[in-house]
Length: 116
Image 1 (spheres, rainbow, N blue to C red):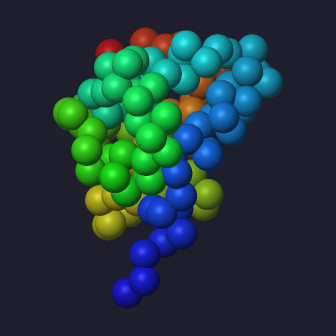
Image 2: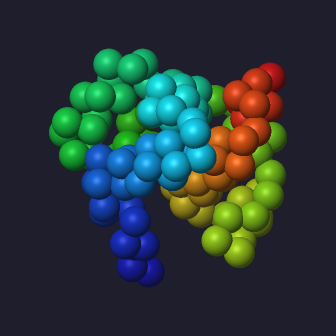
Protein backbone atom coordinates (compact mmCIF):
# COMPACT_ATOMS: atom_id res chain seq x y z
CA UNK A 1 0.00 0.00 0.00
CA UNK A 2 1.38 3.42 -0.93
CA UNK A 3 1.79 6.04 1.74
CA UNK A 4 -0.65 8.91 1.92
CA UNK A 5 0.79 12.10 0.43
CA UNK A 6 0.52 13.99 3.76
CA UNK A 7 3.10 11.64 5.35
CA UNK A 8 5.87 12.93 3.10
CA UNK A 9 4.87 16.60 3.25
CA UNK A 10 6.97 18.73 5.55
CA UNK A 11 5.24 19.71 8.75
CA UNK A 12 6.66 23.22 8.23
CA UNK A 13 4.74 23.56 4.95
CA UNK A 14 1.37 22.99 6.67
CA UNK A 15 2.15 24.73 9.98
CA UNK A 16 1.51 28.28 8.59
CA UNK A 17 -1.97 27.14 7.53
CA UNK A 18 -2.72 26.06 11.11
CA UNK A 19 -1.57 29.47 12.36
CA UNK A 20 -3.52 31.36 9.67
CA UNK A 21 -6.70 29.39 10.42
CA UNK A 22 -6.39 30.24 14.12
CA UNK A 23 -5.48 33.90 13.58
CA UNK A 24 -8.43 34.46 11.20
CA UNK A 25 -10.66 33.58 14.16
CA UNK A 26 -8.83 35.81 16.64
CA UNK A 27 -6.60 33.13 18.13
CA UNK A 28 -2.79 33.20 18.27
CA UNK A 29 0.31 31.37 17.02
CA UNK A 30 1.20 30.85 20.68
CA UNK A 31 -2.04 28.90 21.18
CA UNK A 32 -1.34 26.79 18.08
CA UNK A 33 2.14 26.02 19.41
CA UNK A 34 0.71 25.16 22.84
CA UNK A 35 -1.69 22.67 21.23
CA UNK A 36 1.09 21.06 19.15
CA UNK A 37 3.39 20.80 22.18
CA UNK A 38 0.58 19.39 24.34
CA UNK A 39 -0.23 16.74 21.72
CA UNK A 40 3.33 15.69 20.88
CA UNK A 41 5.45 16.44 23.94
CA UNK A 42 7.80 18.67 21.95
CA UNK A 43 9.13 21.70 23.81
CA UNK A 44 8.84 25.06 22.03
CA UNK A 45 12.53 24.82 21.06
CA UNK A 46 12.11 21.26 19.75
CA UNK A 47 9.05 22.32 17.74
CA UNK A 48 10.98 25.19 16.18
CA UNK A 49 13.85 22.80 15.38
CA UNK A 50 11.44 20.40 13.63
CA UNK A 51 10.07 23.31 11.60
CA UNK A 52 13.58 24.45 10.62
CA UNK A 53 14.57 20.89 9.59
CA UNK A 54 11.48 20.65 7.35
CA UNK A 55 10.63 17.32 9.01
CA UNK A 56 7.89 15.36 7.22
CA UNK A 57 4.64 14.53 9.04
CA UNK A 58 5.47 10.85 9.48
CA UNK A 59 8.83 11.63 11.11
CA UNK A 60 7.36 14.53 13.11
CA UNK A 61 4.94 12.20 14.87
CA UNK A 62 7.31 9.20 14.97
CA UNK A 63 9.94 11.31 16.79
CA UNK A 64 7.46 13.04 19.10
CA UNK A 65 8.96 12.89 22.61
CA UNK A 66 5.75 11.86 24.37
CA UNK A 67 2.37 11.70 22.69
CA UNK A 68 -0.17 12.92 25.23
CA UNK A 69 -2.24 10.03 26.62
CA UNK A 70 -5.26 12.36 26.87
CA UNK A 71 -5.34 12.59 23.07
CA UNK A 72 -7.54 9.48 23.14
CA UNK A 73 -10.26 11.78 24.50
CA UNK A 74 -10.32 13.68 21.18
CA UNK A 75 -13.52 12.74 19.39
CA UNK A 76 -15.36 14.12 16.40
CA UNK A 77 -15.27 14.46 12.65
CA UNK A 78 -12.47 15.90 10.52
CA UNK A 79 -12.74 15.87 6.73
CA UNK A 80 -15.84 13.69 7.02
CA UNK A 81 -14.07 10.99 9.05
CA UNK A 82 -14.45 10.23 12.76
CA UNK A 83 -10.98 10.62 14.28
CA UNK A 84 -11.60 7.89 16.83
CA UNK A 85 -12.33 5.41 13.99
CA UNK A 86 -9.07 5.97 12.08
CA UNK A 87 -7.08 2.73 12.16
CA UNK A 88 -3.71 3.93 10.85
CA UNK A 89 -1.77 5.44 13.80
CA UNK A 90 0.07 8.23 11.96
CA UNK A 91 -3.06 9.39 10.16
CA UNK A 92 -4.95 9.35 13.47
CA UNK A 93 -2.29 11.61 15.04
CA UNK A 94 -2.49 14.02 12.10
CA UNK A 95 -6.28 14.13 12.37
CA UNK A 96 -6.08 14.65 16.15
CA UNK A 97 -4.03 17.76 15.44
CA UNK A 98 -6.47 18.90 12.75
CA UNK A 99 -9.36 18.47 15.17
CA UNK A 100 -7.62 20.47 17.91
CA UNK A 101 -6.86 23.32 15.49
CA UNK A 102 -10.51 23.25 14.34
CA UNK A 103 -11.65 23.52 17.96
CA UNK A 104 -9.29 26.46 18.51
CA UNK A 105 -10.62 28.23 15.42
CA UNK A 106 -14.21 27.62 16.58
CA UNK A 107 -13.51 29.52 19.79
CA UNK A 108 -13.31 26.67 22.27
CA UNK A 109 -11.43 27.55 25.47
CA UNK A 110 -7.91 26.14 25.74
CA UNK A 111 -8.74 24.20 28.88
CA UNK A 112 -11.33 22.16 26.96
CA UNK A 113 -9.15 21.82 23.85
CA UNK A 114 -6.35 20.39 26.00
CA UNK A 115 -8.80 18.00 27.63
CA UNK A 116 -8.22 19.25 31.18
